[in-house]
Image (cartoon, rainbow, N blue to C red; front, top):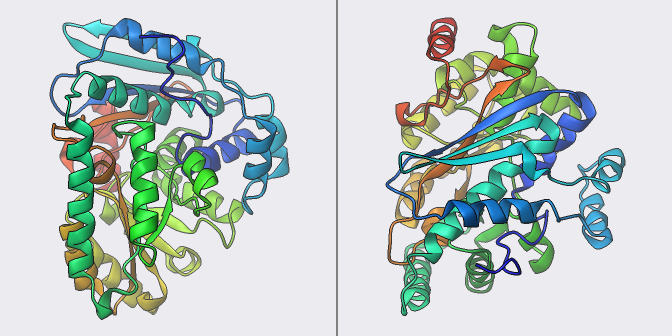
Amino acid sequence: MSISNPVITSLLDTDLYKYTMQQLMVLRYPKASARMLFRCRSGQLNVAIDELREQIELLGDLRLSEDELSWLSSLPFIDSKFVHWLSDFRLRPESVSVRDQNGELEIEVEGNWAEITHFEIFLLAIVSELHCRNQIKENTFEIGRQRLQSKIEYLKSHLNSNHTNFSLVDFGTRRRFSQEWQQTVVQTLQEQLPANFNGTSNLDLARKTGMTPVGTMAHEWLQAHQALSAQLQSSQKQALLIWLKDYTGQLGVALTDTINMKAFLKDFDPMLAEAYDGIRHDSGDPILWGDQALAHYRSLGIDPAGKKFVFSDKLDFKRAIEIHNHFSGQVQTSFGIGTYLTNDMGFPAPNIVLKLVEVNGKPVAKLSDNPDKVMCQDEDYIQTLRALFA
């Protein structure tokens, strides 16, 4: 592979929440250290270690241009102090270690939390694209175009007058086939579904297409507070309160499954439930999850019709419509769809993650409402969390 062929060509080619979380890391926790680990949840990856290392080295050459910084500063929730910090920001490839362990790809990232956070999406997108390059056949792009068009036609045929508020956004950066293909998908959806396609999580694509950048907090934010908070039991609530304080009236969707939905609802008290615009589902049964959330809002005397449920777990259009129909008239819904749109090219897409496992030398974990998504190196710590949060 040529060194002139980088997978990532802009520091904006990532999800919005990387910058909104990084902003709070810089302004609130500038000295926090962290460690992240890679996991492939699917089959064998076809990625050459040397190629991957070369791509990681290329990340160190990237800087935000004046135009990119100006565009970022135009977003109402981005602070000028953070933009100034970003003007000198660069990734340090030496923070990443890569090795082949008995045929399994191992990636570890360690360093200052605010500096290494961006490696998550970049590394996942790089691994995904390098793997997919080795699967390409003569008709791969034609298959991708046909499948995308078929999905769009399916959605159009199932949308009627009751679906004018069906909202779809692109969440597909981390496991995409390629940057070029994601851009094709976004532009195609923008052209063919103008009433329903309402944004992308990818900042670079949002800037190029004039679309709204969309995002919530991520597990990383809530996980980190397990180590940053004075008390573990109140860590999730503290993370939610800090986010709310710093982004008052903006970015008001809370993620519910860092521990599990039951633990989240215990922390989601009347003040938080009223102040947050809505919540995001990312694991477990979406209907059960939503029904629990509706009951919680109603028990607090809050009309859920004014709230939003964002669904983002392994969605396709069929499932999204089923969920939308179930909650129609009860709550606003939005669907963040990723791999189904940005990496369906005739072969299985890799199911890969890069998650926070340690902050300031202390273990942190994601438990989730799906046991397969549990991520932590310290089994004793997992048991502590489970006991503490029941």
